[in-house]
Image 1 (cartoon, helix red, strand yellow):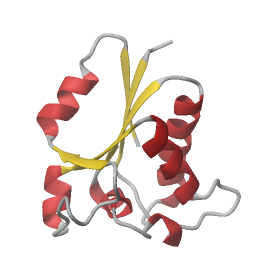
Image 2 (image 1 turned 90 degrees about the vertical axis):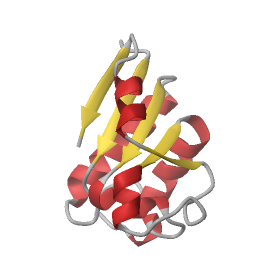
Image 3 (image 1 turned 180 degrees about the vertical axis):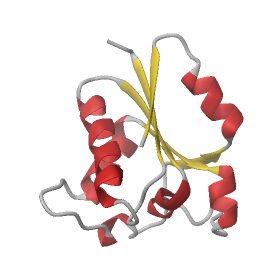
Length: 120
């Protein structure tokens, strides 16, 4: 099994099942002891803002705020630099613990030995 998992989630409320699946897989991996880095890109970028995860609803899915809290506590959550800029989101706007970083950092994480990368 990979020691590290990098997940890029591109979907938000526009594709709720895909979005929820990415957060669920990431949270389960954290709970299993895997080092997880979740990247918020595209429409999922909004979940870096306080309160936005609470607005997300999907029947029969774990609440997104709970999944995000577990990721912030046991993994790493990153907001894509370009996605943040396109939405006028700055570091002062995001939830504590969310960093903003770009493609170079994503590639560095994804290319680390023992890392599996997934895109949702």
